[in-house]
Length: 230
Ligand code: DC
Image 1 (spheres, protein in one colour):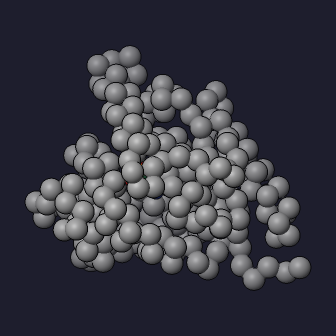
Image 2: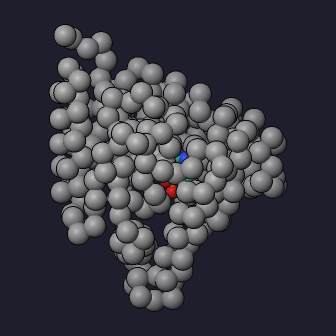
């Protein structure tokens, strides 16, 4: 049976589990588009802070979602974050945004405002969607669901390496503390907590190279998609 569209792949995991980089490489390998939904939450948090809003004021923040656009880069990845015609990519990955993004993300009005956006972007298929609640809430009918498992220590070490920091230094320990704090907040919130869908395939990344992880996820996708007649 011929399929009208490419697969919808939900790739979830906690902070720094590698879902953004693994997802981008996976999308390139499969010839799919790529959406990192954390960008939407980060952009909304940045905008709320710019406007001087309280991160817990969901009703005031949610309407700002209409001001955020995502643009595709040359590879078809939706990585360009545009607010009011201005690219804000670097501004949304700062410690200031890190500190407030969990508070903004737990507001039900915020999640409702971004739900339709995410579903609309995925509707035509042929896309890898990275996040924390994609398989469980945003796209429960996704063709393939993967949850990336990685220990807090491994994730903190990766983030420290990105920043050129020794994981054993006080800055390195602060990275681990911040990750644990966000895990706790994102995983325990009332609406759409970060957790694997019951039918997600878990891929453990500790002790594996980036290339090995991409290959492992691609194998899961190919097996699931072939199994579904794709
Ligand atoms: O993946 P990230 O670190 O860029 O995500 C930033 C924050 O956005 C994260 O702390 C929680 C929130 N988020 C979410 O609640 N749901 C998603 N699908 C993606 C991100």
